[in-house]
Image 1 (cartoon, rainbow, N blue to C red):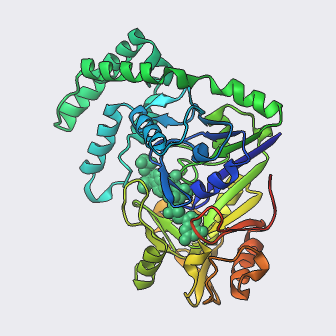
Image 2: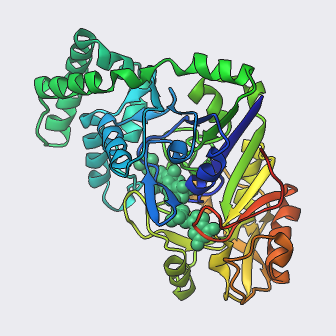
Length: 428
Ligand code: GDP
Ligand code: IMO
Ligand code: MG
């Protein structure tokens, strides 16, 4: 049994795609288990850049199967577009499958997401407007449409009719927007079902069998713990469980089957969308990090907010996920910044010094970050492949993180390319 879970520990965009791609070369399965096409996972394969939203980032290198499991919300139009993009570059996609149980993002989900964001003006969450929240709402309300329903025209029509009765009332009466037409949505989705039927399968049986046979299975998280519906900065979160715990319900595998829990964090921190960010740098240095790090959303193109590494939130993320292997990415981006700062504590409104994360998002806005200052370095580290070749200050930076969290950093990423890694321990 060899299972690996790659999860984000901050607010997304930590470089999960790059790490998944690297690990997928030795994986028999690469599995997405939550989220949808709100994700944007960047992979460089030679000179070619791929941004994967819905397809597992293993699609390029995995010799086995790539699975979109039951916990993912699937926009089938995005799926088809991504498949076409990959195939247009001469790559095969016949190893990609979707769970019959996965819920479908329908046009009304995307509209609802968009109308709500527009309606709330300045206080919106800043979603990707991909319909993620509304689709998960329907799943939990037990009115959702699943991939398997696309294969049964009668059930599909009934479900679209039922859903549009309430959604159309909301659109016209509450939002003052046009109603949607059952017939055109039905026709579109029945055609999609026909086109995708060879890829819509039961995935949980096969995954459990593969675990039993000791195959290498890599679960790829989207988003990150600080965007987790339960443990993130609610309500400024996504609508799924990006944690390692989410793997069990999102792919139908037992908790006892999860072994290598790999947490990915940037050497600094970024956030897209609204919500508290105690270590945010609203200044020139923040802009410098944004430019050097290329911090612009892979899905929406929005500039990412930037800030110092926050070990208080990272400790919270490692605890909830049970991380036993850390990956630090984008260490190269910190080259030339002196001194470097890392958050070790927060000061609360009433002057208390704490080192744990709070459940009160409102209070977090008023917390003051307390920093430890560390020396920076000037050397270009993008060509370094051996840990001992790193500048002393860079090693101290990594070791400070390890000491604070009590977890080893097994891989340090020093550039976006597949080869730009310092691997301290082979996991496979
Ligand atoms: P994901 O959503 O976690 O997969 O991350 P994204 O792909 O949204 O954002 C990470 C960005 O950083 C991408 O543009 C990657 O190509 C890039 N990247 C990943 N690792 C490194 C690294 O170590 N150094 C640098 N400079 N860029 C990196
Ligand atoms: P990857 O997998 C960064 C953010 C959105 C918004 C909030 C809710 O690339 O790390 P949603 O559309 O999910 O309802 O939006 O979550 N968000 C992400 N931020 N990386 C992502 O994915 C994200 N997916 C959603 O910006 O703040
Ligand atoms: Mg991303």
